[in-house]
Length: 450
Image (tube, rainbow, N blue to C red; front, side, top):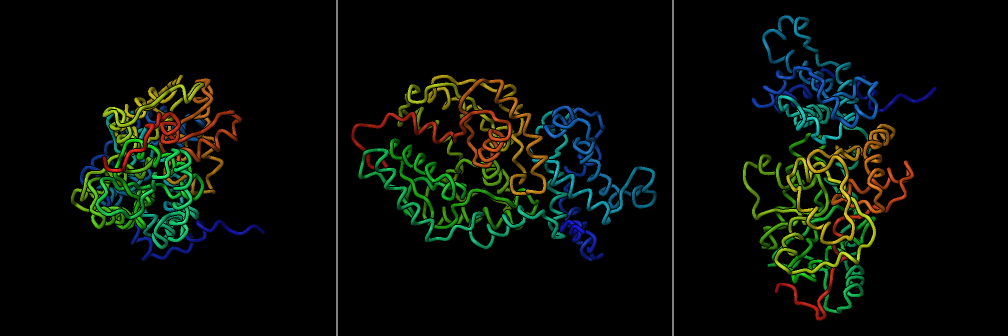
């Protein structure tokens, strides 16, 4: 007899105290603006026509964003409205019980990437991602984060980064990458700076880079070297990813965000450069001030924005002939739609590639690749993730491009899987790599800090 699903087993064994803890966490997360959202959905169905889950499998009504909104709203109405408390059957108010919790896990974790496409296409502007995160926060309070995502969050908390990279491994990786950098630049003075006090810029990365894509760190260092930028990586607190955002846990989110702020303060830098991670950018740049009730200690910006400044200030020169062939750009949801970094990737793509072809739709209207919202970490939903990703696979195929570029390592992982699953026959690269490949290096190396 097959073993029972571990999440369902946890749900079956929830105590009344645990259910109350989850409900209290949910109600506490619903501020007045969210409360308005919960009571405003008119079920017009427009969101279903914009959601990748719904479009990939239109025969499954549980994929529609309005279904997820209703699951969350019905619980709020049950416990926060006089009608719901006294006559729940009149307005469809739902009891927060084990059955409801099971539906929440499947819908809120298993059928949403928090991409926000439904939000910007909603006829009345409902903040659907915020509602989903509030619901996920309740599940997190009851210990119901799906395995994989749960271990990713735990590893980030306990080990300092979500890949569990030991400090000595991080340092040794940077040491041999510095040798690679010197070979790339043909300059023995080229450096990958670590814990350099008083540097102008603190650079943060997705830990998947040192673990699986170390040459992307070399690419960034090559750009900094060519631009004469004063920069450093921190010994600790270099993990830009903040999976507290995906599980709706503000305490964890604050803990992870503060590690970067602390490094910036201790090293005395002027700004924080956020590496290629879409949700990390949203968490650190836009969400963290609300978590702390204050602004960051120094300004924060994406490495994408900084590369554009280097280009506009003529601190770097790019030759598009060094990237021949056709290239297309995937817009990471959190960086572009939710984060506002829209035209900067295009400025770089036009300057760094011979033939840049846009996907359709693009910019804020882009489709999620299917890997966001923690989906890549939750193997239980991998079949849905790949099914949903067909929307993006079809977009890529229609461009005819041979290289797909994404300024987000989570997106890159998903795009690589889509490339294999749907036999697209393309290369997948980060934007930093493409810019670094197009660099025209100065004949004589600059000194960092010029």
